[in-house]
Image (cartoon, rainbow, N blue to C red; front, side, top):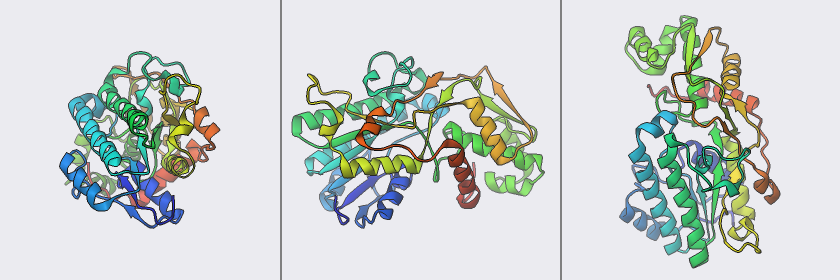
Length: 354
């Protein structure tokens, strides 16, 4: 890529997209194209076609997606499969139609089977059943991988799929209902700390409610009080977490240095499993993570694990060997990353309410 190459980052306001834009700018790229959802609805086929005709991007990073935690995935199943399929179909197809030089499609390691061997290598894909709670989202992302592979094989495009592990970092979603586990834990434990210290004005401001009674009634639904934070499940499941700016660095590295032909062996009889895991190869239990956040936030209360709630997959660890062999390895370890993210929340979150 040249520094003035036209690069379209779909989903630039999200956790993933904002980190990628930051890395691109730091490297001196000056022609970064972005659109908010209000400016361009990626589920609208005609709108996406018109956008590509007008802007003619040379490179595309598809980081736009409907995402959420276990509650959102299991509650809004139709929304997750429809919206993600629509976004992918439109952006990937128009990238082919308009001769995009390279596309990077971002998925998730939830594409792998519930009982996949650990750590999960790319070859685990489609070997057994998925985790039920996020099956619609996973199927959409698998479709995206296969769409990129199929267009590459049939049309000679240069579309690369990457599957980041659980991400966290600046611009994450801290919504108590819809966020992923790490930002949800940070906010819940932080709010419990404020209650414990009787800093009620800050609680009211954070939740954008009229008084502390409304705030406490709302937080009670999520198991948050001045002395206790309830956490879904047993705390035993182990998860891997990657700092978002590390992930962005890996994506830009692949865009600059690797092509689709580098994602499989020339000796392979079938071209498949060409996607690339982006992860650390290290995991932590949810209980250990919660206690780490508790220590960093400075909450003096108790963490209680509700075993009536689902755990999800018990172990979910990626094998990043393929990416490592391609020349990239993570830099930021979890404890340092959580400290950075918590400080970002305190300094930059504008308290959008619930």
